[in-house]
Length: 425
Image 1 (cartoon, helix red, strand yellow):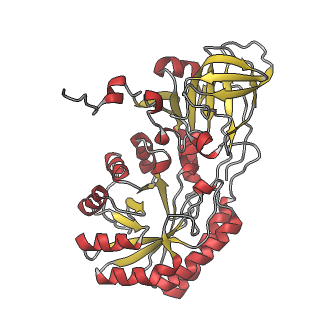
Image 2: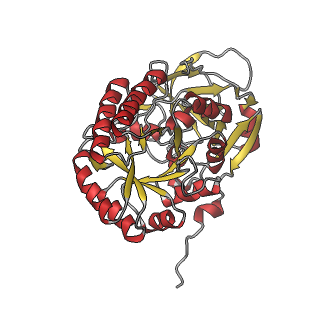
Image 3: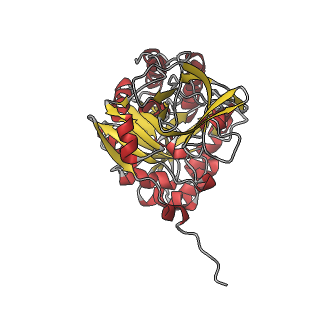
């Protein structure tokens, strides 16, 4: 299990590559991923039979390919994510060991997703009873997984809680019998159960999830060959936070799996579905300080990245470690500052708490033209990027063995307006 390190407020490199050189070569803002960190996090989870990456956390095809080459399969929540998985080398269908390289997990089918699932024989993790009927109407005899809502949830924010009656996610646990009947009507076999109650899972809640999973498997019966622990594994964004004990986490799920195998008389694969855990700590958003402003008692460092690049602070009040890249080695005193972006919104602040309350961060004195790094930005960073204020999407770079590789070009202004049309008058 990894240990929590310190979060220095001054740095000069990412994975041994100069941040200043990265910024000069690729401009800013740019997401920079350390591939070695992703591989380390994959290794952390090798006790599980199957590691299924929830690509919604960071879906660049180079990252998907890195995961694939390290034995990780993938989850897709949209037709677009299915296309990404296919482009990265994953295949539909079922492997010889019974593993599905791509699983489509959602609460609905749009027409594109349904068509792709049929065309490429994509295994479906159904989050609504209606999905069973919709799949059965075009693909009789399929095998499916049910994503169940056990009636309770957990999350670091209400917006990341995916269980309980306030959540739209999953099939309500009391509807299993109805789902079995719908499946039988279409010759569909329920071979897997998936349960994900939200982010920041702790062991107390996990024990509840394991118990709910055991009961659900008993209700479905011995057609079950796979159970998924879902995701939500925490990563520390500051020194007050910690990792979950992965040995205990695996042991709880393994005990449930073994108990069910003994009761049902068949083997059951144990999957885990990390997203943020694999990618968050690998990612850094490199920005340039474009203004240092004093507003009353507040000092603002204004950078060229905004919530159009990293939305987690404005959405959840999320904390991200921040470091300054000084242009020289001169001693710097720390000052209390607010870090904000260029957008025409008062909420475009990276140092804020949930509810929009602006907070300060102790950072080294910095000057216009120096660089600032928003760290632990590899999950729900680039993938949530937008063109608000007509800002182009940031570039993405991956560092492999000490070399920086461009894995997504910065969006051009032509790209920004592609598809738009003037009216013929």
